[in-house]
Length: 309
Image (tube, rainbow, N blue to C red; front, top):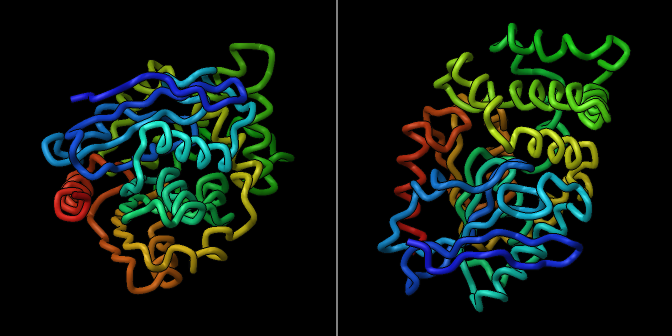
């Protein structure tokens, strides 16, 4: 059930699509979707019960139904955090729970660091904290030992001279997908998104995945915005979350991490636990990165039911 939806003008030419969903009398929950470049969908609502939860979903700049689509102009982490705060003010919400997975988990932590007085608690999964190692994990191909054929396909498009490290590989892809030739741009955006998508779930069917990406209108946005963010260190100082962790240590944070996550390495969730302290509860489950993997979905739904009310 949608209480309210529409586009919020946040300035800089951007208008964000949002939905205020669920029980209008419940304690509000802000949801950050993953990406960068993805969007929220009905599947994000699967962890929540509209009878007991009120969740605010929104498409970040350049994503989904927000406009302009796939735009990197005035699009940084700082802008995204500011947009979430503008949405809170627009909806006249004093405080809320904040949740997010993957890229959304980093935004959850970043929002709490910026506005700790506005956050009741956090729920994160597929934990990502913007460390260089976490970006290199994907872009330097560490999962190639599990997906050798898929990595060979991805890296085959990159000349040897551009394989120095993860950043040079990413820069080459970024340059190609920004070519004036539409066929070249689409090809590299498709291959970029395919490699990352291979790493998302333990339930992997290569034929189905290729068709899904080919038919998905957000494939271009994901490729453009991911390279835009990751080539710029997500527009934050190195180790920013860890260097500011003291600002949020008193806020309860519950994390769920898939043991077989090939997209965000499972050790990150433990590194964060050691830095965060006793208010951080970490649960490992037999899942991949995908929030829809059975054990991941069950764990998140239980946390939502017992703690986000």
